[in-house]
Image (cartoon, rainbow, N blue to C red; front, side):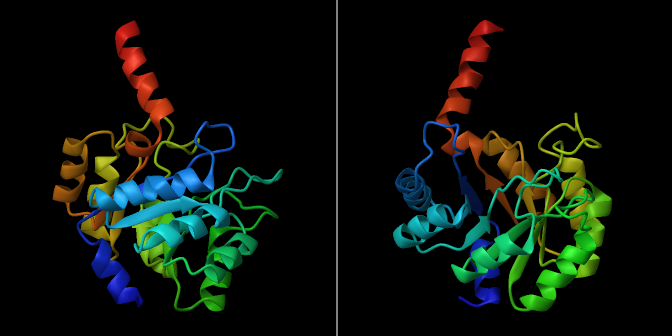
Length: 229
């Protein structure tokens, strides 16, 4: 698929995030590929996934566009979603249709700003679709100005300066849709079909749902908490 075909494929649909961290019971590339297959059979238009091994396993199982990320922690930065050019290189090499990067205003490893980082990866990969994972409007506006192809609300509530933001962040979605001339992906805190529908009705290009579909431990905790409350 070329970039236009990828964007056409995901427009108006649901992208399912299939991820498990090392600390979670479902941490296994085979399991993530099965999760992606189940999402595909359920009508998902794309998959968001973490790590090279998981993405390769998923691509063997389903023929859907993948938003690829690599979560990597560095001692000198709080940025962990595709934080350096090294991770971008790895995702490009395995053919991720879209690569998502942290686009917050926090410094990346080596005290690199998002502006300098994105200019470098855009120059290196001019035809790659990049999604900016942002937490507030100023970050999205900068990402759009720099040439990011897609603006996401992924990090809303997850940076120190947006902590406590009600999720899903419909206010941020609305500003992006109204003020930025870029496809907007709603991501973060969508737990129900009605919340998903509200995001789409705002005018976002498509939406990502992860925990509510593919993380049974967290889903179980929500039900147990309801009993405790």
